[in-house]
Image (cartoon, rainbow over all chains, first blue to last red; front, side):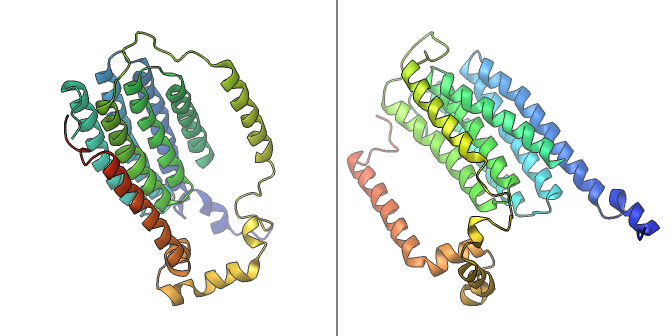
Length: 106
Length: 181
C-alpha cells in the first residue's frame, strides 16, 4: 500500500471536495423545490398564480446558477445569474401588464 | 452528486416540456414555456456552456416571452374552458416514431471527452486551433475564437441575414411593432 496517511485523509475535507459536494447537493434540493413551484404553474387556476410561480422559479434559477458557479468553480455562471435576475423581472412585468390592460405589453 | 442534480433538473425540464405541449390556453403555454426555458438554461450552465446559457436566458426568458405576448396582443386569444389540448393521434404517432429513432441513436454518441469522439477525427485541425487560437486572435475561449476570428466573415454573413430579416419584419409590420392599436 503506497497510500500515505495524509492522502487517505484528504478526500473529504482538505481539498475542498466536501464543500463542492455541499453546493451541488444544495443545487439539487433547490431543483426539487423548483418542481414544487412548477406544480403551482401547472395547477393555476388563474393566470396570476402562474405568473407568480414562474417569477419564483426565475428567482430560484438565480440561486441555483450561483450555487452551480460555486460548486463547479465557474465564476462566469454568475453573469448568467445576473442576466436572469434582470430578465425575470421584465418577464413578470410584461405578463402582468398584458393581463391587466388587455393588449398592452410595453 | 452532480448526477443527482442532473436527474432532478431533467425531471423538471421534462415536466415543463410536457405541460407546454399539453395546455390549451395560449397565455398559460407562454408562462409554462418560460419555466421550460429556465430549466434548459440551467442545463447549459451545468454542462459548462456559459455562452449558450446566456443566450438561452436572453432569448428564452426575455425576448420569446415578449414576442409571443406582443403577437397575442395583436391577434385573438381563443377563450376556452378546456384545460388541456385534445390529443391528435396521427401527430402523436409520427412524433412517437421520431422519438424512438432519436433515443435509439443516443447510444451511438461517444462519451464526453472520449478519445474516439468526433472532434478528434481530424487531430491536426483541432490541435492547430487549440495551439494557435490565443496567439492569432487574442480571445481566450477557443469556440469564440473560431466563430468570430477564423470564421469571421461567415459569422458576419449570418449577422447580415438576421439583420435583414429584422428589417423585413419591421417593414411587414408597418412600423407599429411597439405601439398599441
